[in-house]
Each structure stands twice: as C-alpha cells, then as structure tokens.
Amino acid sequence: DEVRHIDWRLTARLQRPIVRQFEAETSGDWFLMLDASSSMVAGGAARWHAAVMATSAMAYALLELGHRVALVAFAAEVLAECPPGRGTSHYPAMARMLRALAPAEHGATSNLAACARRIRGTASGFVVSDFLGPADLRPDLAALRERCVLLHALLVHDPRELRLDAPDAVELYDVETGHSAACDPGAAATQAAGVAHAAVLQRLRRFAALSGLAFSAWDVARPWQRALIDHLAGAR
Image (tube, rainbow, N blue to C red; front, side, top):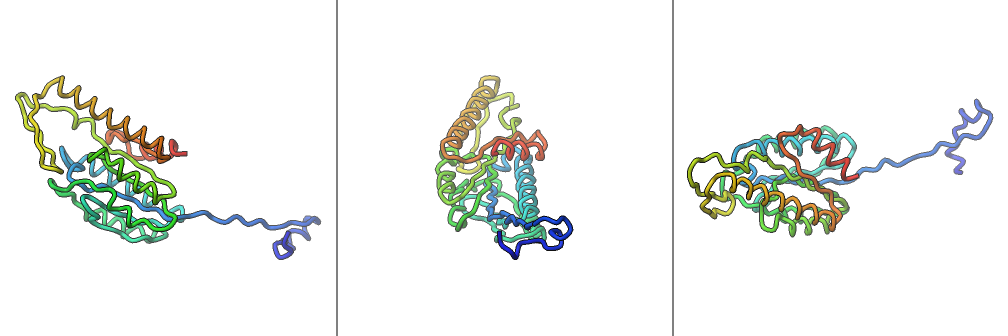
C-alpha cells in the first residue's frame, strides 16, 4: 500500500494500520436522439408528448448521475441540437429545446442515421422513436451501433391508432412520404393493422438481440416512469 494513503489519525485511534481506498466515479457521454418526423404527430399528439417526456426524464437522470449529455432531434436531417453538457445546470437548455420543438404535420421523413455523425469518441446513445420508416430504421440503428459503446432504443406507440372508426371506405395517407392507399375499415382492417404492428416489434426485437442493443416498446397509455424503469431493468 502507498504510505501516503494511510489514515494516520484513524490508525492511531484504532492501533492498527488503516489505509484509505479510492474508487473512481464512472461517467460518460450520452447522446439522446428524439424522432421529430411527421409520423410522431399523426393521429394526435399523444405519442409526441410521451416521447418528449421520456427524453426529458432520461436527460435529467443522466445529468444527475454525472454524465455529459447531448440532445439531438431528427427527421430527414438533424432539426435541432443541444451540445454536450454536464450537471443539472445544463438541463434548462435541453428543456428549452424540447419545448420549442414541433414536428411538421406532413413531409418530414425519419432518417435516424443523420445523428450518427454527431457521435464522437466513446459515447452511448438513447433513441426515442416510433420507428416508422424504411426497414423499421434497422439500418440506421446498425450505423449508430457501430459508433456507440451502448445503444438503447425505446419505441413509442399508441394502440388507439391501429383502429379505424370510419363507417365507409377511406384513403390512408402516409404523412411522411405522401403515399396513399384505399382501405375498407372494419374488424379485418383492425386485425391486419395489429398483425403488421406485431411484426414490426418482432423484427426490431430480433435485430436488437443480434446487435447487442437494448430495445423495448412503450404503450403511451402506461406511465412514462414505469416504461423507463422497465426498459432500464431489462437492459441490465
């Protein structure tokens, strides 16, 4: 043991050598990535408000734990960015950015890979998105995974959006790409939507397991606190 680490006062009192041990605090860089594409506000603002709440909570928690945190909002490109900062005094800047964000109602596609070039060094990432995009944004996640020490992905969804309450045939419109398709609402359409959504979750979970990233899906009807706790517990 190092002589300079001896606690002389405690050694004299206890009449046996007492050596101080030091443990370095571990902290790192985190990039929070929030999907601000048009699909996040399609069908109502519940999904967007939930995503903002989850991102805000993660930012505060990571800053409280001593990490350096940056925040990026993306659609087809990076829309807004709060540079890395440390300490809870950095939180108001992030809160102001989140408060000012408003996804475009149509035309803003999802390009999560645009965030990859913002990540430098040994950093971890946390993505909050509906993952409605080409190939469920899995290629984008793969690009991020190569740059991140740890990567988390939280899918935000609202099951109410899988139901159509129209009595007659309707035309579905993709607010991101502008594509449209005819649909006959009813039990069959609702069931098909549920099957399609389940398939997206299955593909993302399989991809996450193979890629070594933490993934979970959050129904916005559940409290955000419970969703984040369950996600982090599963990541461990």
